[in-house]
Image (cartoon, rainbow, N blue to C red):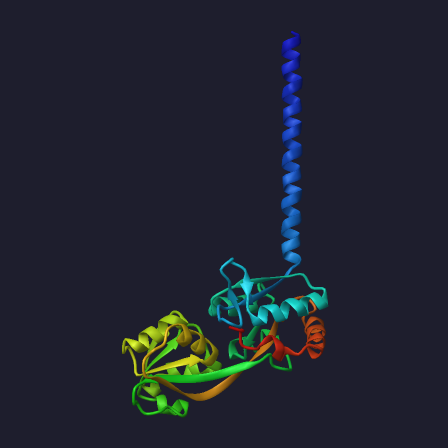
Length: 256
């Protein structure tokens, strides 16, 4: 009889302990979810040396370090998350991503706030191999075979490249590295690329007889989704902080 009662007490005790554990886990999970929701999500694309995921799997780069200091001064909790460009744009539109640093793109003009001052920029180059005619403007690409990066707008140039009336045979490369591999393999006559990414790739893996011309320049801006609470107030606050920072110091080429 005593044994039976003891077993009942022990069973009740075990159930109570399990209930307490489950309750504690639920509270911990809710706290983690609330903490994550309170963080501002800053999204970036893989574009060294500006923004990239390092060997340790962490967000890194010149602009990541810049924004780390800016958010710290603003007292804003944040996390950096990488996305493909197209996914990043959609996230900014629906507010699931709250901020980024991007070139101006028409698809986001009505969905986001843009900083008044740029945070650096870079050249748009057209590469070729050998003695092909130099490209001095986008119109020179009409009727040519061209390689470009998938998912990038090149400040509106991508729409020109895709326009059927320009008769451009466009091949899309999945990465910066593969774009030069395609050019070296003769997949097209010309490659449209960003200057900084090109310098990094060609320094690591030179392409014989490659040359380029510059056909434009794009600038980057701080972007905040209009879906973010108090987006205008937050942008004004961050811009005020940026005024007191020498952005150029963050954008210097990496020391060898």
